[in-house]
Image (cartoon, helix red, strand yellow):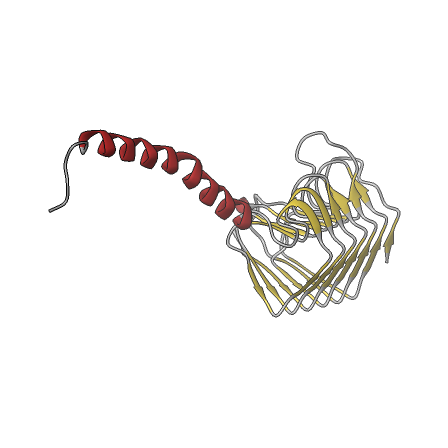
Length: 212
């Protein structure tokens, strides 16, 4: 059990990793860091696998808005299975933040996310490189920006349950959702005036002509 630990530097309130690691049957409670990984920080530059199994994360967080303040519980992991994340908090990725430079696609299986919070994006989990969420449950997670539960691009959610997750954009899933919406509204905003202008020119040029 790791409780009430604080990182003297900016990373990993309980554990900071620079190599491959497997973590089993552990509890992480109220651990904090200033920038990345309130409980666990795995360096994205080493591109070494971090796997977490059968563990619980409660009330871990990133405590300052200075720099890259991501991943309330975990910053960069590759496989997470049978874990519970509750009341974790960060600027983005309230429970988990996976950065693209880590080189691995995040896979989360049979895990539960409850009441995690992000100031900006992804109340529960953010996966920039892409994530696979399988048999997971998301309850009451919140984000001030997009993705009350999940944020990032190329996300796959298989047999997952989303209940009462909230955000300004994409209550359950953000990133891809916001991108699609932007694309739709962007088309309306830019293409419609062009079509209207072309139609006006056609109407003017076609004045006086008739269909036989």
